[in-house]
Length: 115
Image (cartoon, rainbow, N blue to C red; front, top):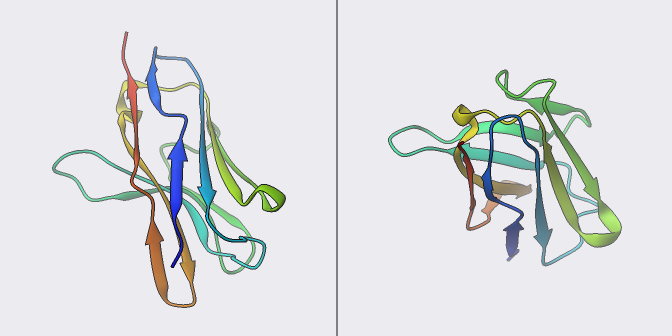
């Protein structure tokens, strides 16, 4: 079992920045598949950014060039730097990782972009 705790969400004006953090309850150094998804009411959860099993990173089309995923294995933490935020980025952001075939999710953190 793995616990994931997200933090860093909040209210930000359009054009602003936020950095989300996801702290895992175990070492992530051997975990390849992990990243961030987001969801708005009435819509499916969508990929924001993730590290893949192949060793590269994937970004959702709408966030390419604005968001950056990174990780600090020593701190068991994955980050999502979000720049140039827009109202359409408003959502609950979830941290995810996969161990073998088992998916683990955090509880989510709300990001609201509004003036």
